[in-house]
Length: 121
Image (tube, rainbow, N blue to C red; front, top):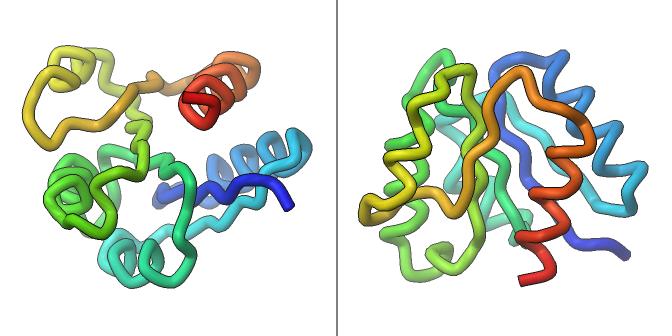
């Protein structure tokens, strides 16, 4: 069984693409579109990596990231933020920041490379 990835995005088409790509690469992918259920899902799924969209319908992904990083049980899970906003790289240096960042639209091979690198670390 491959490593488990939790992908959170409010766009079902993006979740489908992420699921398809990373499943093909041998990862077990769990997807959710509701930001409010992230904490419960992380506790349930125990992912090795989280892909988290910044702009969710119901919540700000940056706030979810902070909450995960401040939670002792989840703080060691790498988080890659995904956003159409290209100015998020500066936030990587902040406390409780994501571990990495991918801009939308993303190249499939770039996504695979980022995920592989994070999970190999």
